[in-house]
Amino acid sequence: MDENSQIISGKLIRMSKDTKIPICSKATPDEMAVDLKPFVDFQDEGLSLEALDKMIEDRLIPHLMRYDQSGFQSMFNAFPEKGAEFGAMIALSYNQGVTNWQVSPGGVMLEELCCKAMCRLFGFSPSADATFMASGTYGNQEALYLALHKQAEKEGFNLAEKGLKGFKDPSRLIVLTSKDAHFSIKHAVRMLGLGEESLRFLPVDTNRRIDVNQMKETIEKLQESKDIFCVFITTGTTSTGSVDPALPTAKICKEIGAWLHIDGAYGFAYSLVPEWKHLFEGAELADSLCWNPHKQLGIPIPNSLLFVKRWEDFGRMTIYSEYFNRREDPEPNPGLKSPPSTRPFSTLALVTSLRYQGMTKVIERLQSPLVAVKEFYENLKKESDIELCHQPDTGILCFRIAPNGFPEKELDNLQRHVYDRIMAERDRTISLTKLDDKVVLRVVAISPIVTTLALMETISRVRALAKEYKK
Image (cartoon, rainbow, N blue to C red):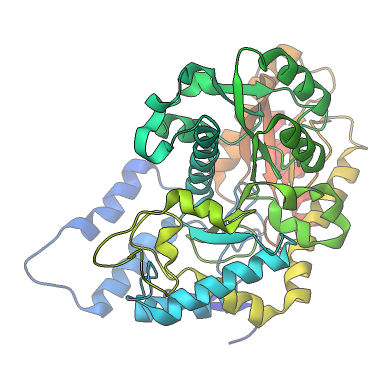
C-alpha cells in the first residue's frame, strides 16, 4: 500500500488531490432514500458478505462525503490517519469496553496512561487529569456541571444530592461566554436545568475574539445581582476559528472566583505548533478544557478528551456501584470520571496515530492548513471584490463576495446563491454562516491536502457563480 492509499472499511481507497472527483453524489434526499432503502429491508434470510459488499459499493459509498478531496473545505472532518486507522481496527476487532478494570484491564490502563501523557504534552500541571468523551458537546456539558458543583460547594451543599433547589436563588446563576461560542453551551445549560436565560453573551473584537475590556465591564455590572460561576471561552471558534484570550480571562476568573472552561474542541491542537503557540497562552490555567482529536488529527470518530486542572475535580462526577466501579476497587476505573457506563476503546487509535507519525510529522500535519489559510488571506487582501470578515487565527476564513457596484442590500442573497450552487455541484464544499447579521461564506482547511491553490480555486468558482446571480 503506497502513501496515497488507505484501507477504509476493508476497501483500498485511493487518496487524491484531484478536485474534479465529486465530493459526494448529486442525489436529492428522495433519490438517496430510494438507493438506501434496501439496507433496512430486514428479511428472515440473511445476505452474504459479498452481496452486502456490492450493495454498499453501489448504493451507499457514492453518497458518502469524500473528506480526502482538496475541494472539501466546509467542516472539521477528515479520513482516518493511517496509524489511527490501524489502532481503530484492532480496537474494533476486540470490541473492548473501557469503563472499568473488570471489563478490560489493558484498555483501562492504556487510557489512564494516555490521559496523563496528553496532560504533559499540552503543558498542564502534574495534578491535571483527563478522560475520553464521545464529543466536545458532552465535554462542555460535564465541565459546566463541574463548575456548578463547585459553586454549590461554596454555598455549603452538595449539588449531586440536592440539585438546583439547593441554591437560595438559582436565577442568580450566570455563565459568561462569547457571542460566537458553539451552540453546545446552550445544550449544556438546558441539560443542567439552568435554561438559556443563564447565559450572558460577551462582545467580540474585530478579530472575533472576546473583548477582555468589555468582559470586565460586564462583570462589574453583574456582580451585585448575579453569581458568575463559570466563564466559557473558545480557543478556535466554530465560525471563524478565532482564539479567545485565555491568560487574561484566567486572571479575571481567579479574581472573581469563577470556573474557567475552554472549548478547544477544534482549535486547541494548534497549540502544539510553535508559531501558533502564543495564541493559546494561559490555556493550561483553565479549570477544564475539551479537545477533539477526531478533527484535524484524523482520529476515527468519536475521539474527544476533557481535561481538568485538578484530578480530584472528576470526583464530582463519581457514582459507585456494587457490581463494578466499587468504592474499594484499587484499580483505575475511567467510568468514575464521566458517563456513560459503556465506553469505547478510543484511546488506542490516538496512541497508534501519534506513535506511527512521531510528533514532528504530527506538528507538520497541523501546521500545513494553518499556513495555507494564512497565505489565502494574504492573497485575498489584494482582491477588491472580496470582503474579508476577520484575520484568521487558525484554519478558517470567512469572507463575502462583493462585486464592485453590487447593491449592499442584495449581498446576503448573493452569498446564499453562491453557497447553494456550490453545494449542488458537489465538486467542492464550503459553508455558510452569519456574523453580526451578515451572511458570509466560510472555508475550512482541516487536512494538509487543502492547499492555498485549492482555496484560490474555490474563489474562482465563487466569482463565476456570483456572475450568474440575477438581482
